[in-house]
Image (tube, rainbow, N blue to C red; front, side, top):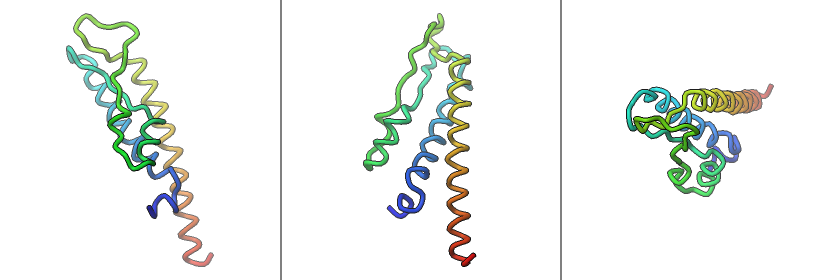
Length: 112
């Protein structure tokens, strides 16, 4: 794949981080929904699956709560917010790497 040669695993990582961010945001948005089951993406497993050309669905897991609620909701806000912040930082790191790579390629094409 051409993007793999140019950008390494960071292009795939960026897509997976985005997917995980949406999943964590959904968990946070449904914190008060009775019976809602929080889900997360095992990033390392998803990256391995994606690099092998497989589906990342096998890397999705339901979160096991530390303290289950009476209404069956498994969202724990502190856990979700921490995971979201860590994922956002990793997303920005991959984005910064890709941006630097694109800038380097652009300068090379221009002959700078």
